Image 1: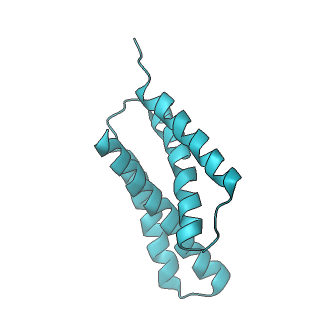
Image 2: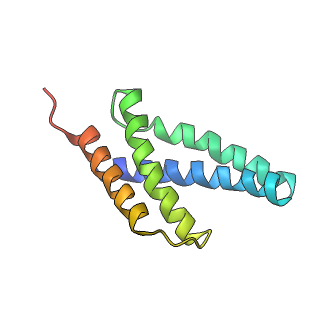
Length: 108
């Protein structure tokens, strides 16, 4: 379970960080190499997800979507300095419950 969570966090940081670097390049006029590093980070996001031990691509990416939402709220808080409100936290909590059900529900 720790390995699964670690990979989701690693993939999330690569995706959000890569997207953020491209945002800064295109929207804020940063140098081209910011966009290149962003593209590399986004490619790494795709690689990290393949290291998950679950056999279903769809299940892994659906569960990752919930983790992505939580990490995005935290990124906005830590990097963009936009404090999440109650509804952001409630929504993130609902996503976390959904991810847990999808990944660790008993299946026969």
